[in-house]
Amino acid sequence: MLRSDAKAPDDQTVSPATAARVSLARAADQASSLALRVNSIRLSRLDLADVVDQIDEDWALFPLLHDDGSVGVMCFEPACIIAFVESQTMGRVSAEAGELRRLTQTDKALAVAFLKVFLRRFDEALKGAPTAYWTRGYRTEDAVATRHMMVLKLDRAEYRGFDIQSEVVEAERPINMRMFLPIKEKVAIQNAKNKLGKTGAALLESEHTIRRSAMAANVEMDAIMCKVMLPLSELNTLQPGHLVHLPQDAAKRAHLVDRSGRSAQSVRLGQPRGMRAVRVIN
Image (tube, rainbow, N blue to C red; front, side):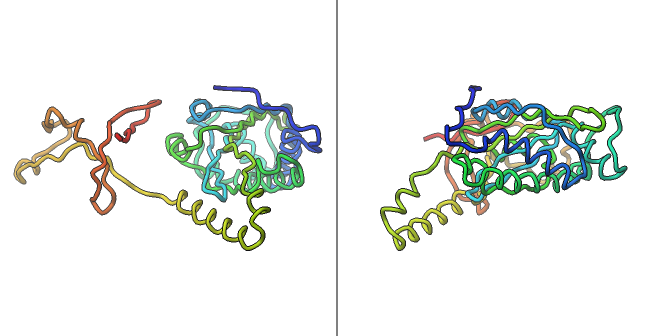
C-alpha cells in the first residue's frame, strides 16, 4: 500500500527531500555540467508490490547496493538519460527532446558518474541528521538490462520512495527520476553495544557482519518439475514444435535442486505479477 511518509523530526536540520534536491543539482553540475532544477520531490512509504508496479521497463534501472546486502534502485526515464548523453557528447541539451529511442547500455553508462556523485553528496548532506541512516552505505552498479532482472534483486518488505520531478534549466526539458531505498529503522544494536562495552560490542559487530555476509550470499537453485526418459534416436529427431509428453502429476513432483544436484525440497509452481515463481511447501 502507498502511504505518506512520516514528517521529519523537529530537530531535523536538513530534511531528506531538501538534501536530495541540493545533491541532485550539484551532482548534475559536477558530473555532467548539466544545470538541473529539481521542482518537487514526493516522499512515500511503499510495499514491495507497489515498488515493482512503479518500475518501468523502458527506464534505465540502476541497482543501489547497501553494505548489509539489501538492494535499492534508482530509475531514470529515457528523457533523463538522453539529456545526460547530449550534455556529455554535444556539450549542451537541445530544446526539443525529439523522438525517444530505446536506450542502450552505452547510453545508461553515462549516468553512472552522476549517480555516484549524487549518492556521495546525499550522504554528506544528511551527515549528523536523525535521518542520515536512510542513505548511508549505498553504492551503485551498472544498469541492469531488463526490469525483470531488477525486480529479482528486490527482497525487502518496505521501501522509501523518492518521486523526483525536475527539468534541464537551459532547455526547459522535464526529466523525471525515481529512487527506492529499503527502509532501515534504527536498530537496537547500538544500545546493545553501549551495554556490552568495547569487547562485547566488537563481538556483536563481528557476529552481525558474518550474518550480513551469509544472508547476502547468492545461492543458485533450479526448480525441476520432472524428468523424462527418451531413447537417443527419438531425442535426435526433436524439433521446435514437437511435443514431449509429461506425467499427469508432473506439476506435483516439482522440487528444488542445488548445483550439486541435491535437495528434496518440494515446491509449487506459480506466477506472481507476471513472473514465474515457486512456493516452498512446508
